[in-house]
Image (cartoon, rainbow, N blue to C red):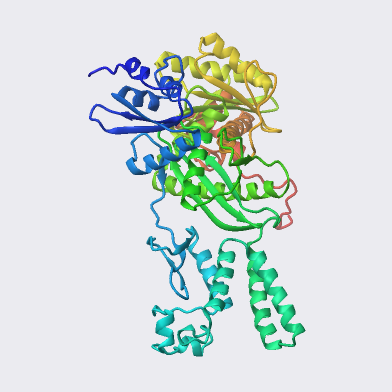
Length: 611
């Protein structure tokens, strides 16, 4: 394969803001990026000292040509990059997953303008407001307009000449009171345009101005004793106030602000946008971004900011964001609120994006369960500070009863799911009395000594049910086997769900709702259940064997043989002499029959003849 002489290409790239394009051997555009300094940014891709991810290395290996476009400012670079990505959709760029055509509310460019909704934009001078991500919200606004302002719905050419010639007659909408009849000059164009201007204010979020002016008109009508007009204005006023009370979420002093928040996963990111005018959210939408390389949240959020502001034609001077965005633009103020009404707006945006993310992830994982597994394992690796995905996890637990019948149990999870065929339990051989630490040391040593002898692959993570003491005991065995650096080991203390690492005196606390902690708890509980079940069987067997040893001629070994053969004391009690002799000799069989024979009460009343 022809090698790319990137050093020669870099010599031609200036230290200026702009957009760069990477091309492959087939002259196909594979990546578009922007930079404040083109030379420095492009050079970074070929710097071998940088720790880049595998996808970026693949991208770099395919580059055979570099082109670039110089712009004046970093903001211009963002805008140009955004438009070029939309046009060319390169393979390695973030993919904006948004294939819907959202509806707009249109104020038609005509005499006595009509207002309706559409999904198709025609450049004819009409005013388009939106788009509306929520169709139901759009219809709610249109219903409010229809109830408040009688407008025409016909498509007649209402020119002054046609109206003066009397070409039209009023229709049923006029009779119903839904239109004031401009077609027959019953409504002046000035009066109609006045309603249109108020509607524009409502659609632009300036509803407070309309309500205030309507209140003044209503008071003036009452003062003039024009109660019919006052009643009509009062009805409109109530409708607008009702709508405003539903829409206002923050202090009305917050005017013309854009709000953005982001929720990111391994392969996807989700960005929510709120457009706020006078404390009212007039537009909202959440989009999904599919990651191609190792893009940061800041890069993704900035990309989405330009996309939304372009889509909604927003020119807000203030943008509320969850973290600092390093973008030099004197015309925009970025705010990261900590308290107050703006923080409430940001919280609302973050709630929306988190809900959208959960909904989308659930959809993906129902269709592709392996996606959930990969995401969960990746999250566990990140939360537990592991070097590899914990595909194979083993958890140890001990059980005993006042130092008697000690057992250890191990459960195995593969790909975050129980692998019950791999569960094991151990009868403790070297420990006397209630010594939980020594029991753990023996179980861990026996488990991994055998795995090493058999050449079985070791787990990526070992979980010890217990605190520092049990963890230290487990580490002794692993060090003795020489594998302490080959596997990650953590201990979980039950009281506060503290996670301990070897050699670290301070525990790690995970969020109580985190999926990582839930998997660890499931492992711990499963190990406890499996261990307790085995322990009870052993204890019950031991108790029954002790009872059989009370029979003359039956020792511990014979008692265990009887239980193994008959499975229970009940069946031994019900067995006849021939059945018992399958296990014991005749003398022992008679002793067992005598022991379990029905016994008469000590005081028995008898009846009979007196001699």
